[in-house]
Length: 245
Length: 225
Image: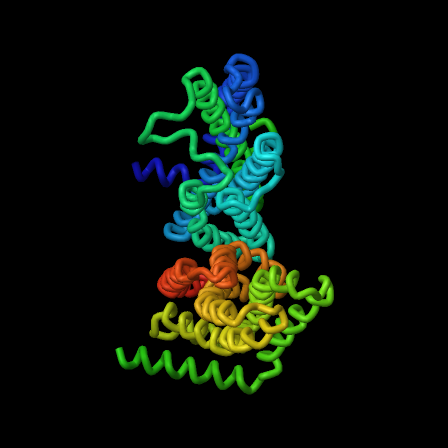
C-alpha cells in the first residue's frame, strides 16, 4: 500500500501512469456525454410544469456537482500537500482549480439561462446562487494567490492554506436551499429519500453526471501531466519524454 | 502558563504603542470611511427616503472596504524589520500571538469605525433604534472581519504587491458578515427584533476566534520561511 503511494508520488512514474490512464477516462466520458445529451434532449419526456426548459438540468446539475466536488478535491489535495509535503498533491490542487472554476462558471451560466424562462429573472440574490458565486471568487482567489508568488513552492503552500480555509463555504452551498427557502428549487437527488424525478428523466441525469465526472477526471489528469512537466522542467527524466510519450 | 500570558500582554502593549505613534496610518481608513459615505448622498439624489433605504448597505460596504485598507499594514512592518521571524521562532504558541495581533489590530482600526458609526448614520436618516442595532452589529462583525482579514494578510505578507490579491481573498469570506449585518439593520429599521442575525454574527465571531488564529499562524509560517 505505502509502496504504491510512494511510487505514485514520484513524478516520472506518475507521468507515465497518468498518460496511460487518460484514455480510460476520456473515451467513456465521450460516450456517456454523447449518450446522455441525446437521452436528455431527445428521449426523456418533457416536464409537466416546465416543458422542455427543464432539460438544461442535464448540464446544470452535473456542473454544480463538479464545482463543489472540484473544490473539496482541491482542498483535500492541499491538506495532503501541507501535511505530508507531497509535491504531487500541490500539482493536483493547481491542476484542479481552473477546471473547478470553469464548472462553477458553467453552473452559474446555465442556472441563469434556466432562471430567465422559469422565474423571469436572470439572477436572484438567494442563498444558493450567492454562495455559488462566492465559490467562484474563492477559486479565483486561490488561482490569483498562487500566481502572485515568485517562489512557486511558497505560492503552492499559501494557496493550499487558502483552499482549506475556503471549505467553510461548501456546507453553506449544500444546505442553502434548505435554510433559505427562496426561488431555487430544493435538491432533486438525495440519498435518503426517493428522488423527485421519474426514472426516465433521472436515468439520463445520472448518465450525464458520471459522464461529466469522467470528463473532469480526464481534463484534470491531462493538466496534471502538464503541471508535472512544468514543475520538473530541470529534472533529468524529462529528457526521456517526448511529445508522444 | 503565566509566561504565555506575559508574552501576549507584552506583544499587545508593543503593538498598541507602535500603532499610536503612527496615528496617521490609523486615521487613514477612518477618513476613507467618512469620505466614501459622503460620496454616496452626493452621487444619489439626496432625498431622505432614498438615503434611508440604501443607508445600511452603504455603511456596511464602506466599513468592509475601510477595514480592508487597514489590513495592509497589519504584518507589513513586522515582516520588514524581522520581528515577525522572532515571533515565529519564539517558544510561545504562534496562534496565541496571532490572536493578540489580530485583536489589537481590531482595537485600533475596527473599534474606531464602530464608534464613528452612530455619528455618520445620522447622515443617512436612519431611525434612532436602528442606529444602535447597526453599531452593535458592526461591533460583533468587525472583530471577525479583522480575524478573517488577518488570515489573508498573513498569506500575502511576503508579497510586495499584495494589496490587490488581499481584496480577492477577504471579500468573498466576508459575505456572511455583510448578509447578516445588513439583515439585522433592515429588521431594526422595520421595527422588528434583530436578535436572530445578531446571534448569528456572534456565532461567526466565536467560530473565527477559535479557528482563525490557527490559520493565521500557519500562514505566517509559510510567509516567513
